[in-house]
Image 1 (spheres, rainbow, N blue to C red):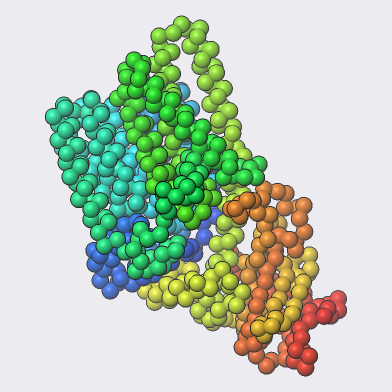
Image 2 (image 1 turned 180 degrees about the vertical axis):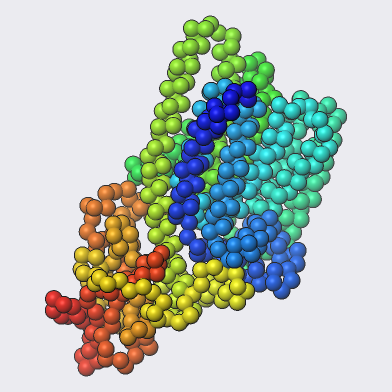
Amino acid sequence: MRHAPFWKRLLLLLIIFAPAIYTGKLVSKYAVDVGCWDMWENGPLLQKWHDGIHWSDLYAAQIQHRIVIPRLIVIALTHLSGGDFRWENYATFTVMLGSAWLLYRLMRRTLGNSPWVVALAFVANLLVFSPMLYQIFFWGSSLWMTLPMLCLLGILNLLSPEELPLKRPAVVFAVVLLLAEIATHSFAHGILFWPILIVYVLLQPTLASPKARYTMAAITLVLGVVTIGCYFTNFINVAFHAYNLKPGDYAMEGGMNIMDPADRAKFIGFFFGFLGNPFARTPFEDHPLASAEFYGVFVLVSFLICATLIVFTKTGRRIWPKALPWLALAAYVIGVAIAISKGRSSIGEHRAVTTRYLVISLFLPISVLSLAFLYARAWLADRSRTFQQNSRLTAACALTAFAMGQLPQWSYGQHLTEMWSHARRQAQALVLFLPHLKPASMKTLDKDYKYCLDSITTLNNLHLLHYQPLASPELKWFKKSAKIAGPSQADITSVKFLSNGQLEVLGNARFGSQKPADAILFTRGEKVIALGQPAPQPKLRLYALDYEFANYNEFPVSDLYPWEAYLTPAQLGDDKEPLELWALDVRDMRITKLEKSVQIDDATKSAFIKGTSGNSP
């Protein structure tokens, strides 16, 4: 390929990175300018930067992670974008694209420059850029998790066989150590770089002379011990969004006891579920965890077979320098699986199939494919031509089947991406009104309400919030649709007073096909006094992780686009005018009035639905 015409090389690159191009368009289309969970930690961080940030602020533990590099990136992105949260999504995609490029370079350096490598790289990108990684691409804080893999692939490229022995070993080794430090201070997974790097340097015979390799290993050991020692010193969590931890808690508090049989069973299930996650997330899986555990065993056994053949056979030892980078990559994934299983299985075994973990686990099957290709090519070189041709045909069929097997995951992943985007639009609706009123229906945000509001206020005061709250809770900020939303588009289905004095109003609302309303505005005159929030009732899978893959047209609007509102006596006031309702489309800042309204009867302490077709008690 190196000596091929430019147009041919360009065409092959377009084929290899076609999945990246497609997913890049998804990121551009579905990224939403609003914070999510840990992203609201940007407020306190930017305030410290404005007031004069200290190293201790950058080095402080975010749960179990010393995210120095991500914090610096967030500070830079926020100032460059004017506070547009989407830039974190774009940065994450850029990091993933860089990882894919380094992965392709590593394949070319170790596997050769044949059409087979083009096919393997394309299959790898089907995994790397699958829309099933929607949590990675559309949750800005996932940027932290992607940085160590970029660093590891950079290290493996620097130490790969093509340029061995090293021409400038001191410079290359210094860059390698710098990348290890960047990884360690991006996410806790980076801690694993140090033992892996020591073993890699000692076992790569063509890297340098034995004496030089021993020196490199010793330096890595010393620097690794110092780095890890500092890492766990004063290991106090400062994050608000930190699972069961609170700011000020010891970051390693809680967890599980591996000696306890019940905890050990969770650990084992989580471990195999994590490794099998890339193959368990399809629209046809009713039990993703059980399937993930099965696939996890299969992938791990496949890796162990490949590793055994490479270590204990003559053919394997012949290709050892080229196989070692892939063994290191696989060791990293397995090490991360063990660490995450120890730290997160106590929260729930089902979390093993959380989509953001795919950004690590998908590299184990890629390593297995690369090792299998390396060994098979070397083994077939000693066989007859006829046998080689038959084997290649079998391999081509298997590779094609593997690629085709990704189609359901891509389809399902895009569906979940759309659902995630809808949820982010609904979060934008809350941001608009958060400073002005606290929706009583905000059940899932009771804990986060004040924290998010404080962060919004901080960012707004620093002029670092691109998507800003409304200046006042009034309808004048929105474009009013000339149409009235009838019951087929938006409806009120129930109104009643609860024992706590709140008025419960239930209904459903959508815009077009498969797009729920982002909020329901309750108004008196031009003033918004309360919000109704979408209350989805999806057909949930086991463990409530995914929306059921189904034809939406088979379900009535009331099942797919419900909302709920809970108005306090203070919000209702003494006004006798009916409550008018408006469906909000945040993307276009457009509102559509509902045909029905809510009338309060103070005399009977009751409420009823008022509409053009008559009143309903």
